Length: 149
Image (cartoon, rainbow, N blue to C red; front, top):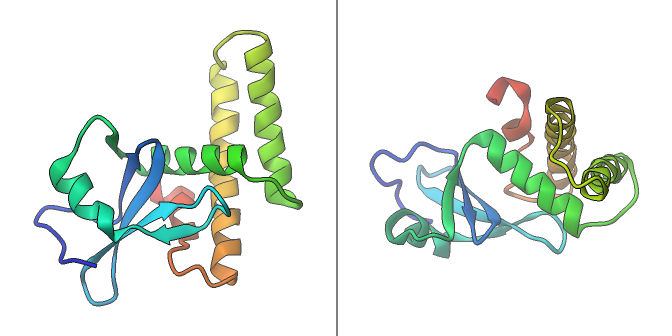
């Protein structure tokens, strides 16, 4: 945890080596970083990345919009995780659409893009709610809510 650098709006979102990272305000007014775990889809502390992302930079770091962060997070969860239940059924739906696109060697239509984005916003909220119930301190379903977009 560190003090919030001047001008940093929280929460803020990043891709660090293609992995989702979020910076959030701590209860004592500082900033904390969390990185997506590709093992379980939860969040692991990543405060060691704050200075690197904000001050060092590099081609492997990209600032993301909230929507880009949600899409990257859900892309990774859908790609790396398997399981049972509604969230995983929706991940399978997205994979099926992507498989068709790959087999047809084409880019998605605007309708397909909107469908995938809508499913991923929904799975983000659902997954974050599950994480919250299981005690993940960084879970925040509000990031994926329509009002925040």
